Length: 222
Image 1 (cartoon, helix red, strand yellow):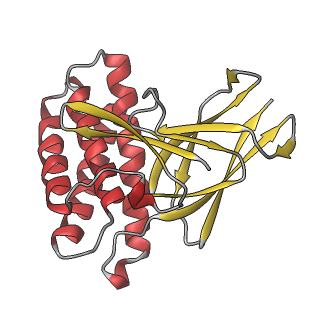
Image 2 (tube, rainbow, N blue to C red):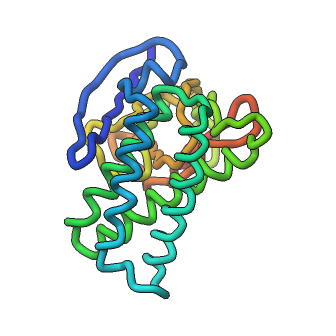
């Protein structure tokens, strides 16, 4: 049995909770958020980005904010037009919204990291949605196979943890599995790391979202 742990951001605060499951259904790993509420909270958070100190034109942060606005708008229009999304996908949009709301009160260094994380997550979601434009969809949850490579060799039974990119340091981690496990995750940006000999490896930012039926994520350790 593997354990999937996740947290939902509700606007300005993350509500942490845990669950043990034995299926690979992404909807079982995320709390229920309606598509309408997800779009509303994301739209509200995006509107607040105009007040961020980095909103000055020409900065890398302002470029990221412009990307967030464009991709959030695309996804919102699709969803409001009736494109179906899973509860897990809706929850991941709420995590983006909460991260943006939190960014307003963060120090500049943390703020730029948070904004970059949300930008990457929404960019992956938007690219996946554009690839599925003909079906008026934004993308299904992905089947993900987690593998771990230690000292250049793929190994089973290695502890692998992960979080959505907008909450990379969330404790407990959103995802906690052993290598060679399969699970369902919404399309987006994630950080993964292995725990080898009781020590976490460096965090790797990885995209979940391809046209493959099953996507393989390989977490490496020196």
